View (cartoon, one colour):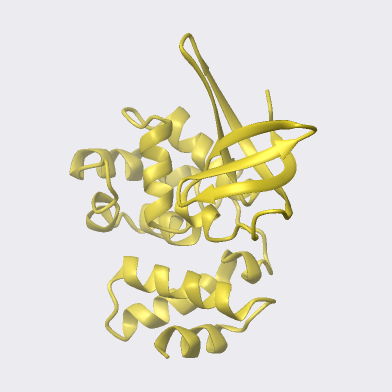
Length: 198
């Protein structure tokens, strides 16, 4: 099983990255939340991967963090009716902290807004993953202090603040991710909120 790939980024689109490793170009499908974090072409990058082998295809899915990759694996192995393409679509719509929060709180309407899933699949996400995210031995944990990657409590706090100010959850999540990317480094919750509101 290929668990990661490191190479020179040749090209990227919102859902695809091409990495060159020792003269071989690898096409890696990525969610929008990972594509937003990719450096400029020509830069070396590492993606944590999940490989899917079928009779007619071999596909690599890549993620900026181990937590993102592990959550993707939870989606495709534990939720009935969710395959790699749907899982990628879900993870393109919302960042990991917001997805985990929605699953823990049972926010079916927010999850149902993800492309490719309806209310029934959103309910299955909550039922089948609630005990596996955000606590307990099987949980997918977000690394602490990883604000520069758009993960962790700083992201959750900034997103919650924007929602309290009237933003819809998906809009708040996108505004926070954009602010973190623009600010770089390890911005504070206050700096992220100010940037998102400007």
